[in-house]
Length: 310
Length: 247
Image 1: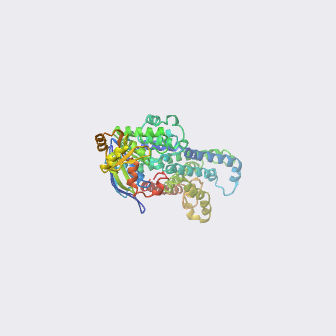
Image 2 (image 1 turned 120 degrees about the vertical axis):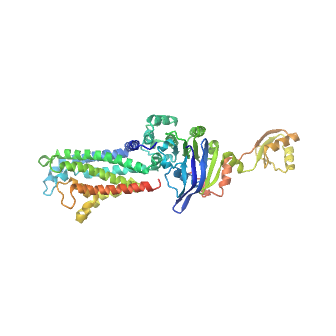
Image 3 (image 1 turned 90 degrees about the vertical axis):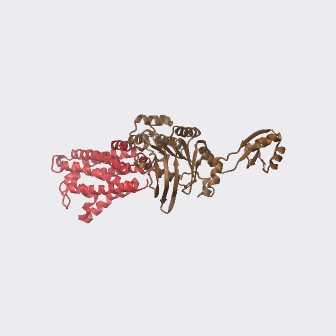
């Protein structure tokens, strides 16, 4: 039950193809980061999974069943699509109560989720008085009401304060540890790299990447090391002899592309050069992602300045 | 693990009563009608009854003209709350069976509207007639009880028509700016001009149930049935919209 399967999923809005023959699955026990530029089709895919929009072709299922065929779906899937969608005139407690009641979930669970999401003291306040961060917390409380095996969050850390960001990260890690399938879209690369085990990347509605995080990072760049030594001149010569091109950085550290620590370390040792620091360089998720999407970005000019949702 | 209809009905009831503008318009059906009754009947009531062509039973429900505006607002706002900032997505995530969702919502709106409508209709009749002195119409008189019950049902039908139309147009403002001028002006003007066909307009037809005697081809109950057909049509197009559209 704890999985999302997407097969050949396609959605056209008029002449625009928002989602184009997507195939991927979200497996239990890990957090799957859902990345892509604005308009890549992430939110559309999530709506299709929930049966809110109907696919032009293809299927999106939860444990093999269409969302609309699930009885009491909140027990199977919890979703946060848009924190602003909750009606501002309702209190947080009534908002959750209306959702809970429809799926046969008791009032005690509503109170429990208000507490857990840090909204215990403001449950009786109208949602319109909430900050974006509080609405995100409410949306997450709503998603977890039915203790679902599949959790789908669209930009959950949007508007959260640093404490909230830590909270959501720990929460997602915990949900995955408990064996749930967790799909989280985000624009924040450093955020995503801090919680995701697996990545699904879209560009212009098409699947670009469906890989474990480590594999994705490795696939996007060759090896490289960063090092510090007391005898830079000698080490530099030794490296150049081996055909490498060390580059000195502003902070006195050297970086060497195309070589791993397992080669540089023994080399320095055999030359009798002391190393103060030696580490393999991993590309950040941001670098790897930008390298990947550079030519896929529809709105490259705006992407850096407008962090809005698609 | 199928969805229980009772649970969805209870959920919709929580939704209606927890949004102030929605519960407010429901209360306004009764409050506005009673207020107008108290303003009009002690002052103008007996003078109006003295006019030769006065249908004193129909006049007893004069204040419903205002109550029905509130009834239309109630139907429109109760449904439009789902179309604010994509609230429908949250609702349909919890209740993906759209037929069940729509039926439950309309049932809750309809039941509340019938209840409030009957109380309002009876209230305006009893309170208004208390000021009519020698012209007063009793509940026992011919057609009076029928008009009280019919008036309540009429309010509920107008509420449901507004709710159904809102499901199609996805905006309370659009529905209100369509229905309110229609009820206040168009029907009033066209009704006097067009004669025969005009009696089939939703408000005109339904209000026949409030008359002591009816002249055209529609009787009091058949007139109300015509309004019922209009409301049914609005509910059907709303259902079609909720069923077929992307949320």
